[in-house]
Image (cartoon, rainbow, N blue to C red; front, top):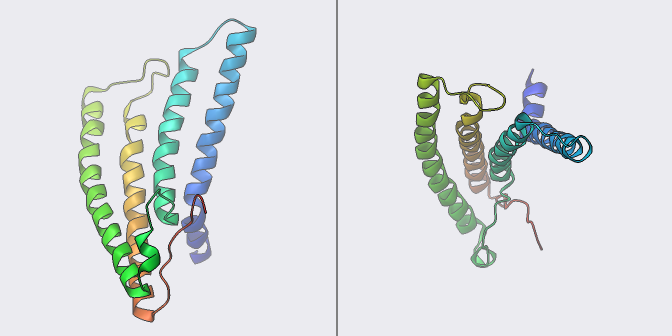
Length: 171
């Protein structure tokens, strides 16, 4: 069971991102072909693409938190020692955690309102709750990854190992 949880911890966002990306691309390709070949398009295709993109963005943000791959200016970090670098990353994680907790709290309001009034999407006729849940799911994943990152940083600080600085987009 622990191997499964470990694999899920390493790859959950990747698989979800792959699933939503494939759904987005396939649906968009089908809709373009339908529009160009059959001169007909559907409203549900546009909605599927839109909501898949929203989930893709929020889960991608959580994956970026896990990999510390968000865009940042880290010129100062090159001049800091390992302990100061760990402290700066931990402070950043704490600030980000606070923002994510507040955003998670407020994101449930739109979900609750949608549930209360039973709103549905125009084309798919599916409850909007499922689509609005992308934001709380994304922030929940971010909170989980921030807590994990903070624990790793504390352990690195305690053992004297260099802190994980993340993956860089450009060198």
